[in-house]
Length: 468
Image (cartoon, rainbow, N blue to C red; front, side, top):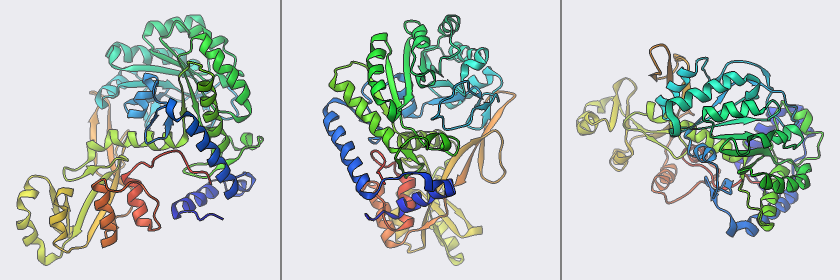
């Protein structure tokens, strides 16, 4: 058996822990099968290489003609408002239960009033807003009120799109959404057995019409037909995303003969290969319909990183830096009690300028990375730690936070919480950190768990998920 890195072994065990005894019902590839699937994927990628553009650390293809909504998603400049958690579709691949009307929510924050949501969008500088669910058309008037409020406040400065299965769409609702200024509507036609009757109502009315569906392996031949049909209908974009397994859809997915892949979450390996084959098919057939593959690693890595980046600057201290992966990096040394005064004298200017912070109570000197060469000469125990920013409706009381006032009546807080325990930088680990900071090495999966932790917090891995 091919040796797995310690990180992959931990992810495998995490996957087993999530599903317990049900894990034994899942089909994962043998090393030989994983190698064969990897070869197939590479053959597809080689065949389309000169005709597509990769983006977001090579986790998404084709990004040459993305809709503006997808561009803003990748850049972390959008807010997704879940208008409800109730759906009238029966999609077997749906990853979450959709049975609660609830209130409009994003990032743990509830927004009953569209005007307060507008204040939130303004305060955090979002350039895009998506209305999702559940199924937004179940709460049509509520969905419409949020679209209207955002567009009235920002006009073309904020791009607004809406996700729907289309079951409840009518010409009247299309007209209302059009008049409200909706920029894009996205249909999951998998919920309607791939019928396009409802979709046709929006073509020519809403400026951008997109179909966004999972790449379902057993529907590959049908999807080839649909690609042609969608192009002929005037659809602007087709987004395939990767199917993933969850405890909620487990019983439905295992009815199909899928091969699964270990990773940050369990995904359907066949779904990825299906999506890539369909992209190659459209290119080979010269079907001029922009198609992009939204892999799980793109969603899990880039969307989460972008969310962290959005809030991190609010709670970052002046001597800290934000990593590529959106975490707050802090370097510090442990100082002997006898050296407190000499340390304060030596770094008086840096302390005054906010490039350092000294705490006598815990014998600790925090410093900006620019001071690393000088700090190394002190020969003191050196550490790196990482924090993550998170937004809450109110403070938990456990961590430092900043209050953000949306308006006179509502506020939210951005907290910083430890992402993990500090790592002591031995000579070998310090060398890795310095090479990372200088851009001399990229992401890797080393045997040292502490170095792996640093890699994870610093960088976003390149490429699609490995098969195992």
